[in-house]
Amino acid sequence: MDKSKIKAKFGYIFDMDKPVAGITVSAPSHTNLFIDVKGVASHAGMAPENGASAIVAASNAISKMKLGRIDFETTANVGVIEGGKARNIVPDLVKIKAEARSLDEDKLTAQVEHMKSVFETEAAAIGANATVTLDHEYSTYRWTENDDIVKLAASASKKIGIEPTLRDSGGGSDSNNFNACGIPCVVIGTGYDGAHSTSERASIDDIVTAADYVIALVQTAAEA
Image (cartoon, rainbow, N blue to C red; front, side, top):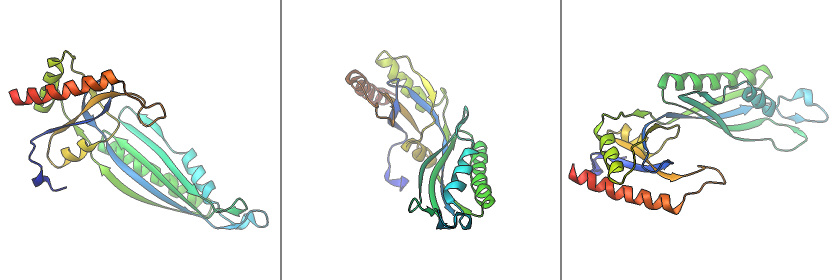
């Protein structure tokens, strides 16, 4: 991104669930893991002992991995598994997509290393091989109630009769990238429910309130 083309001194990203006008003051760093588990193909009925199942290696690794809510700042997930060619072939390749997030860089590094090590160890244990590629997608940020960008957002909330709410987030957004290049940003709640599920929804009343907040934010910034 060419920062010089952005004239704004700071910004607000509308990308969070309830409450409407909730102010997200921190978000995690995020690393993606792309894992190729390579085994040895063989006929599953005639010579299974000659094969090394990439699916078994991947399954063993995932079963021994710390996943989900690791602690109050850290999460991890295996989200995609693709592999195998036919029911009667010992699978020689499985591709996996996983991720880890944390508000603490050291915790993120430790979690990623743990996941990488388990994949490599469990693959080697059955005669397979795991290649893990890492991609650091975005970095953490943290603001406080004393920062100007938060003060302005809170003032806009009060302007429309909403008590300011400060919160941490486990999700990333454009805000991570803007903050990383020196443009202060926080994320503002728009009031939806059930993110990334089949029940994701937003009420008309909350959308209208979010629009009212946008107007109040612009007015508050102009007055400041």
